[in-house]
Length: 277
Image (tube, rainbow, N blue to C red; front, side):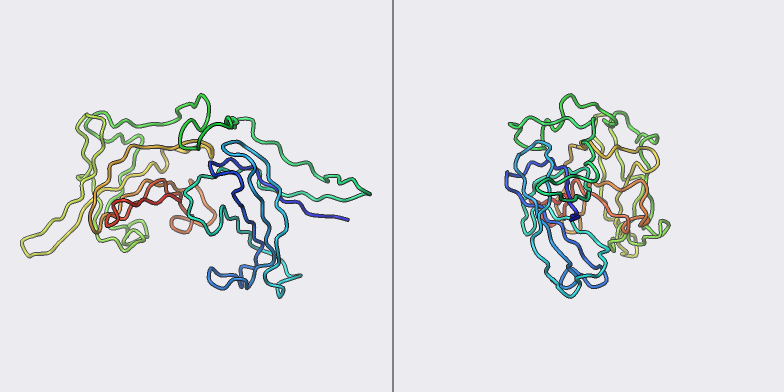
């Protein structure tokens, strides 16, 4: 008898017993708001350690929509701690499956699971979370301490205008400001300042200006690592500072279709809330 086994390698700061859910769906019918339509089956796995790599095997939970039984599945959805807003971090690797066949009481893998990457350092069990000492003896790959009085053009690109020249007018968020280089200020004190300005001309017309920089084409980073910055953000309606990452190449195209990873994002009207996703 053949059986499909799905496994994943996980490293998380979440408490022991945190749940992962894997859903097999038909994307033609499944939407965010019409559960259980289009959901072929769901599988769950539960963590057994904290701040340490482990391999989890998913167990069958249920088949929410019996009407899709027998049809092909073209979409997988992986959820970490579903229905919770915990703020815990999850790293995962070797998300894969293999077939088994049972002979008597012995189950024999038809294909052995892939080994964990050799460059991943296992974290001591007593480490509190992923926010500190994530890897032993980390090596600095890239940095900018913003010394001097001019932005380093070998590391940074300055994006200009209202986004239309990048085919994302309004920068994809109906933003009103114009980005320019004059709003970038360095005073040789190790701090990059981005000033937001409100300009009113003699006719009473209002224009907002700011700056936006990225490392596109000048820096690529490995999928494993830690990214950090010391950031002081302003408070006020209309302010929207962010520190985020984009894929170098994506089969889905340029942002927003290609996705993003937010390290820090804040809506200025909510000074005590920042988003990371």
